[in-house]
Image (cartoon, rainbow over all chains, first blue to last red; front, side):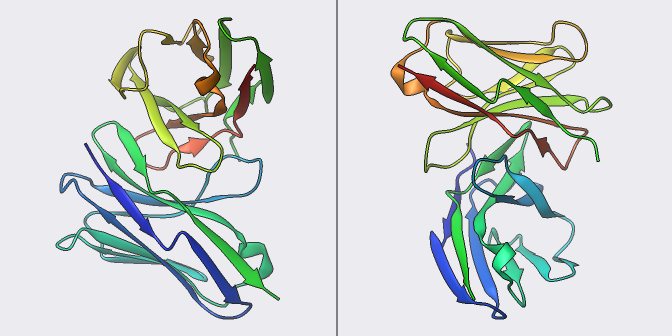
Length: 110
Length: 111
């Protein structure tokens, strides 16, 4: 089955700086890669996603890149703000399911 | 914006008891899922459901678990005889093909 690795597990950044989270996946058949933000006591919330036929996607301060050959994808958050503090999960979809990475706890220092 | 609704938000049950977790997916979605998250760990896939049948399930989803879509709107997860290790957040999700929407979860505590 699919195995998704996510790094780093924790990330502390100064407000205004950029944050980068990286994930690798194992199943070359995976074709959809969403990123979720989870705040305390809430369910994962989709923040951006990318399909396997696209290399990069941007939505305001958030961007995702995908390298299918190397089987890795990354989340970039620019100009971080305190409200970006949360746990971020990457995921990869193969067949009928999403497989999640272990999560990155992002703390934005004011 | 449409939401996936889960009830109850918190359930405490005695070991060995049956529990039913309920979900109302987004109305035009076709794919339904249950995931769980043990405290501090990653979100784990349990089961996917499409066209009124299970399309895929994980090894966690053993004979103690079952899912049902009893009335075309609700989607339920039943755990027949709960164990201590079933304590977790259980998330329901629904989607059309891509872009799953997750509910806020049910925190299940088995004592």
